[in-house]
Image 1 (cartoon, rainbow, N blue to C red):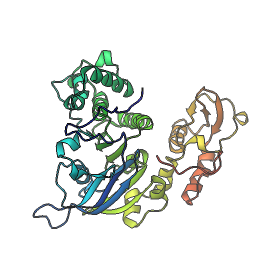
Image 2: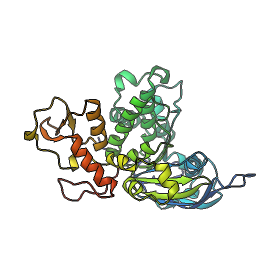
Image 3: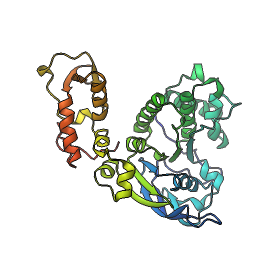
Length: 357
Protein backbone atom coordinates (compact mmCIF):
# COMPACT_ATOMS: atom_id res chain seq x y z
CA UNK A 1 0.00 0.00 0.00
CA UNK A 2 1.23 3.49 -0.77
CA UNK A 3 2.06 5.67 2.17
CA UNK A 4 1.14 9.15 1.04
CA UNK A 5 -0.95 12.06 2.15
CA UNK A 6 -3.43 13.35 -0.42
CA UNK A 7 -4.39 16.93 -1.17
CA UNK A 8 -7.07 16.96 1.50
CA UNK A 9 -4.43 16.63 4.18
CA UNK A 10 -4.06 20.16 5.44
CA UNK A 11 -3.66 21.51 8.92
CA UNK A 12 -6.63 23.31 10.42
CA UNK A 13 -5.25 26.78 9.75
CA UNK A 14 -5.55 26.04 6.01
CA UNK A 15 -1.82 25.84 5.27
CA UNK A 16 -0.78 22.86 3.15
CA UNK A 17 0.75 19.83 4.81
CA UNK A 18 4.45 19.32 4.37
CA UNK A 19 5.64 16.61 1.97
CA UNK A 20 5.91 12.96 3.05
CA UNK A 21 9.55 13.52 4.01
CA UNK A 22 11.31 16.84 4.45
CA UNK A 23 14.87 17.95 5.11
CA UNK A 24 15.57 19.13 8.65
CA UNK A 25 18.01 21.95 9.32
CA UNK A 26 19.22 23.26 12.67
CA UNK A 27 20.86 26.67 12.32
CA UNK A 28 23.07 27.70 15.27
CA UNK A 29 20.46 26.40 17.70
CA UNK A 30 21.00 27.40 21.32
CA UNK A 31 19.20 26.59 24.52
CA UNK A 32 20.01 28.21 27.85
CA UNK A 33 18.08 27.58 31.04
CA UNK A 34 17.81 30.33 33.67
CA UNK A 35 20.36 29.96 36.43
CA UNK A 36 22.53 27.51 34.50
CA UNK A 37 26.14 28.48 33.85
CA UNK A 38 26.51 26.30 30.75
CA UNK A 39 24.12 26.16 27.80
CA UNK A 40 22.16 22.97 27.23
CA UNK A 41 22.89 23.39 23.50
CA UNK A 42 25.54 25.66 22.01
CA UNK A 43 25.22 26.83 18.38
CA UNK A 44 24.18 23.41 17.10
CA UNK A 45 24.01 23.29 13.29
CA UNK A 46 22.94 20.17 11.38
CA UNK A 47 21.42 19.40 7.99
CA UNK A 48 19.53 16.12 7.68
CA UNK A 49 18.48 15.31 4.09
CA UNK A 50 14.89 14.21 3.50
CA UNK A 51 14.35 10.51 4.09
CA UNK A 52 17.45 9.94 6.24
CA UNK A 53 17.86 8.81 9.86
CA UNK A 54 19.97 11.16 11.99
CA UNK A 55 20.99 9.74 15.35
CA UNK A 56 21.86 12.05 18.24
CA UNK A 57 24.25 10.35 20.62
CA UNK A 58 26.43 11.49 23.49
CA UNK A 59 26.91 11.28 27.26
CA UNK A 60 24.34 12.48 29.77
CA UNK A 61 24.06 16.24 29.74
CA UNK A 62 25.08 16.62 26.11
CA UNK A 63 21.68 17.98 25.01
CA UNK A 64 20.31 15.08 22.95
CA UNK A 65 16.76 15.19 24.28
CA UNK A 66 16.87 18.98 24.54
CA UNK A 67 17.52 19.19 20.79
CA UNK A 68 14.56 16.93 20.10
CA UNK A 69 12.24 18.92 22.37
CA UNK A 70 13.27 22.12 20.62
CA UNK A 71 12.36 20.68 17.22
CA UNK A 72 8.70 20.18 18.18
CA UNK A 73 8.63 23.32 20.36
CA UNK A 74 8.08 21.54 23.64
CA UNK A 75 10.56 24.12 24.92
CA UNK A 76 11.40 27.51 23.35
CA UNK A 77 14.58 28.31 21.44
CA UNK A 78 17.10 30.63 23.07
CA UNK A 79 18.74 31.34 19.74
CA UNK A 80 19.02 30.17 16.15
CA UNK A 81 16.31 28.56 14.04
CA UNK A 82 15.01 25.14 12.99
CA UNK A 83 13.61 24.52 9.52
CA UNK A 84 11.52 21.59 8.32
CA UNK A 85 11.20 21.45 4.56
CA UNK A 86 12.69 24.94 4.39
CA UNK A 87 10.03 26.40 6.68
CA UNK A 88 10.84 27.71 10.15
CA UNK A 89 9.11 25.94 13.01
CA UNK A 90 8.28 29.42 14.32
CA UNK A 91 5.95 29.97 11.35
CA UNK A 92 3.42 27.51 12.82
CA UNK A 93 1.74 27.38 16.18
CA UNK A 94 3.15 24.66 18.45
CA UNK A 95 -0.07 22.67 18.15
CA UNK A 96 -0.14 22.72 14.35
CA UNK A 97 3.57 21.94 14.18
CA UNK A 98 3.25 18.89 16.44
CA UNK A 99 0.40 17.50 14.36
CA UNK A 100 2.85 17.27 11.48
CA UNK A 101 5.61 15.57 13.50
CA UNK A 102 5.50 11.94 14.59
CA UNK A 103 6.84 11.29 18.10
CA UNK A 104 7.92 7.95 19.59
CA UNK A 105 9.24 7.78 23.15
CA UNK A 106 10.68 5.08 25.40
CA UNK A 107 7.57 4.88 27.55
CA UNK A 108 5.41 4.58 24.39
CA UNK A 109 2.76 6.92 25.86
CA UNK A 110 -0.31 5.11 24.55
CA UNK A 111 -3.64 6.22 25.97
CA UNK A 112 -4.54 3.38 28.37
CA UNK A 113 -8.33 3.71 27.98
CA UNK A 114 -8.20 3.78 24.17
CA UNK A 115 -7.97 0.67 22.01
CA UNK A 116 -5.06 0.08 19.64
CA UNK A 117 -7.16 1.40 16.74
CA UNK A 118 -8.22 4.48 18.68
CA UNK A 119 -4.64 5.22 19.68
CA UNK A 120 -3.38 5.05 16.09
CA UNK A 121 -6.28 7.23 14.90
CA UNK A 122 -5.51 10.05 17.37
CA UNK A 123 -3.88 12.59 15.03
CA UNK A 124 -6.01 11.87 11.92
CA UNK A 125 -9.07 12.40 14.12
CA UNK A 126 -7.68 15.73 15.36
CA UNK A 127 -7.03 16.72 11.75
CA UNK A 128 -10.68 16.09 10.88
CA UNK A 129 -10.24 13.10 8.59
CA UNK A 130 -13.37 11.22 7.56
CA UNK A 131 -14.12 7.99 9.44
CA UNK A 132 -13.69 5.77 6.40
CA UNK A 133 -10.30 7.28 5.62
CA UNK A 134 -9.16 6.87 9.23
CA UNK A 135 -10.21 3.21 9.30
CA UNK A 136 -8.33 2.50 6.08
CA UNK A 137 -5.23 4.22 7.36
CA UNK A 138 -5.31 2.31 10.67
CA UNK A 139 -5.64 -1.01 8.82
CA UNK A 140 -2.75 -0.04 6.55
CA UNK A 141 -0.47 0.87 9.43
CA UNK A 142 -1.27 -2.20 11.52
CA UNK A 143 -0.32 -4.32 8.55
CA UNK A 144 2.82 -2.26 8.01
CA UNK A 145 4.09 -2.78 11.58
CA UNK A 146 3.17 -6.46 11.58
CA UNK A 147 0.11 -6.47 13.84
CA UNK A 148 -3.15 -8.23 13.03
CA UNK A 149 -5.88 -5.58 12.91
CA UNK A 150 -8.67 -8.10 13.62
CA UNK A 151 -6.94 -9.75 16.58
CA UNK A 152 -5.14 -6.80 18.17
CA UNK A 153 -6.97 -3.69 16.93
CA UNK A 154 -9.63 -3.83 19.65
CA UNK A 155 -7.23 -4.60 22.50
CA UNK A 156 -6.08 -2.05 25.07
CA UNK A 157 -2.41 -1.23 25.69
CA UNK A 158 -2.35 -3.24 28.94
CA UNK A 159 -3.23 -6.34 26.91
CA UNK A 160 -0.15 -6.02 24.69
CA UNK A 161 3.48 -6.99 25.17
CA UNK A 162 6.12 -4.26 25.38
CA UNK A 163 7.20 -4.93 21.82
CA UNK A 164 3.63 -4.77 20.54
CA UNK A 165 3.05 -1.50 22.39
CA UNK A 166 6.16 -0.03 20.76
CA UNK A 167 4.90 -1.07 17.32
CA UNK A 168 1.60 0.64 18.02
CA UNK A 169 3.53 3.74 19.09
CA UNK A 170 5.38 3.77 15.76
CA UNK A 171 2.12 3.27 13.85
CA UNK A 172 0.50 6.16 15.74
CA UNK A 173 3.47 8.40 14.96
CA UNK A 174 3.11 7.60 11.24
CA UNK A 175 -0.68 7.92 11.12
CA UNK A 176 -0.91 11.34 9.43
CA UNK A 177 2.13 10.65 7.22
CA UNK A 178 4.29 13.30 8.91
CA UNK A 179 7.42 14.57 7.13
CA UNK A 180 9.47 14.18 10.30
CA UNK A 181 9.63 11.47 12.96
CA UNK A 182 11.23 12.07 16.38
CA UNK A 183 12.28 8.97 18.33
CA UNK A 184 13.57 9.44 21.88
CA UNK A 185 15.21 6.24 23.19
CA UNK A 186 12.32 4.29 21.60
CA UNK A 187 13.70 0.82 22.32
CA UNK A 188 15.49 1.57 25.60
CA UNK A 189 12.94 -0.16 27.83
CA UNK A 190 12.78 -3.34 25.72
CA UNK A 191 14.75 -6.50 26.57
CA UNK A 192 17.85 -7.12 24.40
CA UNK A 193 16.33 -9.82 22.16
CA UNK A 194 13.18 -7.86 21.36
CA UNK A 195 15.19 -4.64 21.11
CA UNK A 196 17.28 -6.11 18.29
CA UNK A 197 14.13 -7.39 16.62
CA UNK A 198 12.43 -3.99 16.84
CA UNK A 199 15.53 -2.26 15.47
CA UNK A 200 15.55 -4.60 12.49
CA UNK A 201 11.83 -4.16 11.93
CA UNK A 202 12.12 -0.39 12.05
CA UNK A 203 14.95 -0.42 9.50
CA UNK A 204 12.81 -2.56 7.18
CA UNK A 205 9.91 -0.17 7.75
CA UNK A 206 12.13 2.83 7.00
CA UNK A 207 13.12 1.24 3.68
CA UNK A 208 9.44 1.49 2.73
CA UNK A 209 8.32 4.80 4.21
CA UNK A 210 11.58 6.81 3.92
CA UNK A 211 10.82 9.32 6.65
CA UNK A 212 13.21 11.95 7.92
CA UNK A 213 13.99 10.66 11.41
CA UNK A 214 15.77 12.14 14.42
CA UNK A 215 16.66 9.26 16.74
CA UNK A 216 18.08 9.80 20.23
CA UNK A 217 20.08 7.08 21.97
CA UNK A 218 22.92 6.75 24.47
CA UNK A 219 24.06 3.49 22.83
CA UNK A 220 26.76 3.94 20.18
CA UNK A 221 26.13 0.45 18.76
CA UNK A 222 22.46 1.33 18.25
CA UNK A 223 23.49 4.64 16.68
CA UNK A 224 25.80 2.91 14.20
CA UNK A 225 23.13 0.40 13.29
CA UNK A 226 20.23 2.81 12.94
CA UNK A 227 21.75 5.99 11.53
CA UNK A 228 22.45 7.26 8.05
CA UNK A 229 24.24 10.08 9.88
CA UNK A 230 25.34 10.37 13.49
CA UNK A 231 25.72 13.57 15.51
CA UNK A 232 28.03 13.03 18.48
CA UNK A 233 27.41 15.65 21.17
CA UNK A 234 29.73 16.43 24.05
CA UNK A 235 28.88 17.93 27.44
CA UNK A 236 27.49 21.44 27.16
CA UNK A 237 25.65 20.71 23.93
CA UNK A 238 28.61 21.13 21.58
CA UNK A 239 28.74 19.13 18.36
CA UNK A 240 31.85 16.95 18.33
CA UNK A 241 31.28 15.27 14.95
CA UNK A 242 28.52 14.84 12.38
CA UNK A 243 29.26 12.01 9.98
CA UNK A 244 28.10 8.74 8.45
CA UNK A 245 28.69 5.63 10.58
CA UNK A 246 31.57 4.59 8.31
CA UNK A 247 33.24 8.00 8.57
CA UNK A 248 32.76 8.09 12.32
CA UNK A 249 34.38 4.69 12.79
CA UNK A 250 37.23 5.21 10.35
CA UNK A 251 38.05 8.86 11.11
CA UNK A 252 36.93 10.07 14.55
CA UNK A 253 37.28 13.85 14.76
CA UNK A 254 39.17 13.88 18.06
CA UNK A 255 40.04 11.81 21.12
CA UNK A 256 36.65 12.43 22.72
CA UNK A 257 34.86 10.88 19.72
CA UNK A 258 37.39 8.02 19.51
CA UNK A 259 36.87 7.22 23.20
CA UNK A 260 33.10 7.48 22.91
CA UNK A 261 32.95 5.20 19.86
CA UNK A 262 35.23 2.72 21.61
CA UNK A 263 38.47 0.91 20.99
CA UNK A 264 36.72 -1.82 18.98
CA UNK A 265 36.01 0.47 16.01
CA UNK A 266 37.19 -2.10 13.47
CA UNK A 267 34.83 -4.70 14.91
CA UNK A 268 31.98 -2.19 14.79
CA UNK A 269 32.80 -1.47 11.13
CA UNK A 270 32.17 -5.15 10.40
CA UNK A 271 28.58 -4.37 11.39
CA UNK A 272 28.37 -2.08 8.34
CA UNK A 273 29.50 -4.77 5.89
CA UNK A 274 26.86 -7.07 4.42
CA UNK A 275 27.75 -10.54 3.17
CA UNK A 276 26.05 -9.58 -0.10
CA UNK A 277 28.87 -7.13 -0.73
CA UNK A 278 31.94 -9.29 -0.06
CA UNK A 279 33.71 -12.01 -2.02
CA UNK A 280 32.52 -15.25 -0.38
CA UNK A 281 34.25 -18.61 -0.72
CA UNK A 282 32.74 -20.69 -3.56
CA UNK A 283 30.19 -23.20 -2.23
CA UNK A 284 31.78 -26.13 -4.09
CA UNK A 285 34.96 -25.80 -2.01
CA UNK A 286 33.20 -26.82 1.19
CA UNK A 287 30.78 -29.53 2.32
CA UNK A 288 27.16 -28.45 2.12
CA UNK A 289 26.56 -26.55 5.41
CA UNK A 290 23.56 -27.24 7.62
CA UNK A 291 23.15 -23.64 8.73
CA UNK A 292 22.60 -20.83 6.25
CA UNK A 293 22.67 -17.07 6.65
CA UNK A 294 20.77 -14.59 4.47
CA UNK A 295 22.77 -12.31 2.20
CA UNK A 296 21.86 -9.22 4.23
CA UNK A 297 23.60 -10.61 7.33
CA UNK A 298 26.44 -8.37 8.48
CA UNK A 299 29.99 -9.65 8.78
CA UNK A 300 29.84 -8.99 12.52
CA UNK A 301 26.65 -11.05 12.88
CA UNK A 302 28.21 -13.84 10.81
CA UNK A 303 31.28 -13.87 13.05
CA UNK A 304 29.10 -14.17 16.16
CA UNK A 305 27.11 -17.04 14.61
CA UNK A 306 30.28 -18.92 13.63
CA UNK A 307 31.83 -18.48 17.07
CA UNK A 308 28.67 -19.82 18.72
CA UNK A 309 28.79 -22.78 16.29
CA UNK A 310 32.37 -23.64 17.23
CA UNK A 311 33.96 -21.83 14.29
CA UNK A 312 32.45 -23.98 11.55
CA UNK A 313 31.91 -22.34 8.12
CA UNK A 314 28.35 -21.26 7.34
CA UNK A 315 26.45 -21.14 4.09
CA UNK A 316 25.11 -17.88 2.68
CA UNK A 317 21.81 -18.21 0.84
CA UNK A 318 19.90 -15.96 -1.53
CA UNK A 319 16.21 -15.14 -1.22
CA UNK A 320 15.33 -18.49 -2.83
CA UNK A 321 17.33 -20.48 -0.26
CA UNK A 322 20.09 -21.44 -2.66
CA UNK A 323 23.62 -21.37 -1.23
CA UNK A 324 25.63 -18.77 -3.14
CA UNK A 325 28.77 -18.81 -1.02
CA UNK A 326 30.49 -19.82 2.20
CA UNK A 327 31.62 -17.53 5.01
CA UNK A 328 34.53 -18.63 7.17
CA UNK A 329 36.46 -17.35 10.17
CA UNK A 330 39.43 -16.77 7.85
CA UNK A 331 37.33 -14.64 5.49
CA UNK A 332 36.07 -12.49 8.37
CA UNK A 333 39.67 -12.18 9.56
CA UNK A 334 40.70 -10.78 6.18
CA UNK A 335 37.81 -8.31 6.30
CA UNK A 336 38.78 -7.28 9.82
CA UNK A 337 42.36 -6.59 8.74
CA UNK A 338 41.18 -4.38 5.91
CA UNK A 339 38.75 -2.30 7.97
CA UNK A 340 41.26 -2.06 10.83
CA UNK A 341 43.67 -0.46 8.35
CA UNK A 342 40.93 1.92 7.19
CA UNK A 343 40.51 0.18 3.84
CA UNK A 344 37.14 -0.80 2.33
CA UNK A 345 36.34 -4.52 2.23
CA UNK A 346 36.91 -6.40 -0.99
CA UNK A 347 33.64 -6.54 -2.86
CA UNK A 348 32.19 -8.89 -5.40
CA UNK A 349 30.46 -5.87 -6.98
CA UNK A 350 33.33 -3.48 -7.39
CA UNK A 351 33.88 -0.59 -4.96
CA UNK A 352 31.10 -0.70 -2.37
CA UNK A 353 28.73 2.21 -1.94
CA UNK A 354 29.05 4.30 1.19
CA UNK A 355 27.42 2.23 3.96
CA UNK A 356 24.41 3.82 5.63
CA UNK A 357 23.77 1.32 8.42
